[in-house]
Length: 413
Image: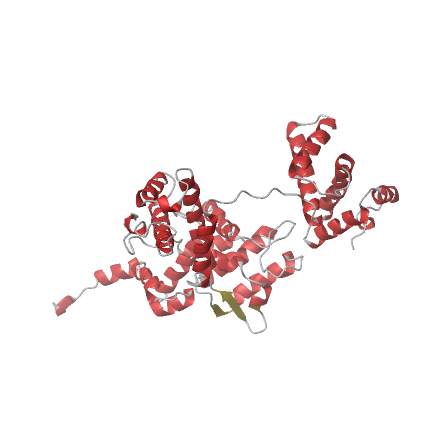
């Protein structure tokens, strides 16, 4: 159990905090903050704010609602000496954050019941079917869930029953997104809604013919080259991360994994400490699409970079490999991994349409092509289940194609 004396050295301050109400509950919460990586400075702010909250709200015996917390924060803010407007807004926000986090930790935050999503029962049956019968990857289900729920919200404002749904409703929805979504995104959404309405039609949840009339924009297989930086730009990117800043140390390890092994952003964010075996020099990766485990040899530069990150910047006991830089520490998200690449490529003025983590996967594949590896070897390295997924990289080696085209046949002709 965390004790107030660990925060304050002054006996009078300790006595004031000990004399306040809910001492045990406050110490339990401060112990939780310490375990999740909050700094001493942040915990001092929380300890002071908890006493303030209790003065304006009383003990959370019967629980607090968010509206009650906001109202107390406004009363407290109006009684404080006038300072800058931005400072007043920050302190009120901190009051709300601290009170909400503490009440939630104690199980005493009375949160409103979320409004049910439209056609939730029909949609949930579809999501369960994708997961349990189709065994689709969690990332695929997440994308399809987002598209289906967004359509159903739009559809509910026009009709109140899936039995009244027409293919023209879906086509109107897709047309309404044309200014917001790229053609490929609209194609993915239209395919998802075709599958959804085919599922519903087969179970008498809607008219069985709806799915057949849903229009999909035409996409041509391998119509464009994978967009990735050159291997020289990857080298520039890594050379820009030689500093000792916490973000540089962590992001260098992340970017090396993306570039050397061609991992996806979700595969990097999902790595655990146990996945890196320094003794056997192995890296174990859970493939987000196939659901299989892929083992790689842990090459020395990557092992050294990960070891530097763990030794210098790792200060908590979470099982995930990559964590946020500042407390409270938590695993990095897929978006954070992609942003770590995007911001740094953009800073180097690398001319790419997309600067995300997947661009390094393309760079890895293009580099392996230039090194003379077969498409089968490249596909195995990238974790492709089908050679068709790797075939697009046969178009990447333009320098090699030019060399073949300029070959002088001489006297053969």
